[in-house]
Image (cartoon, rainbow, N blue to C red; front, side):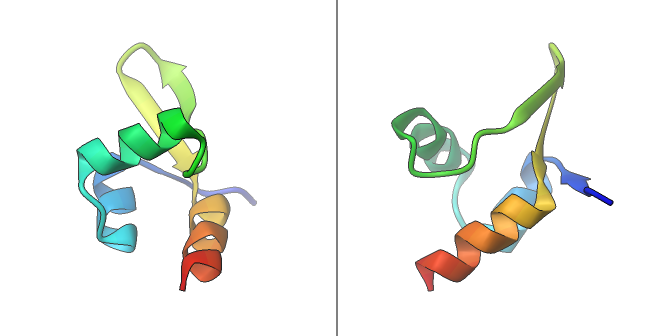
Length: 56
């Protein structure tokens, strides 16, 4: 089952700043989030884990 995480958890997992995450999403260097509503954005935890593994 796919788990979704929000920006505070993405920051904790990656150690990146919020602004860096959004910049890298825009530049295609970080997994794209899923917009659930105008105020709720999530990432698939699996994609974040995979991204972390490929960056280490």
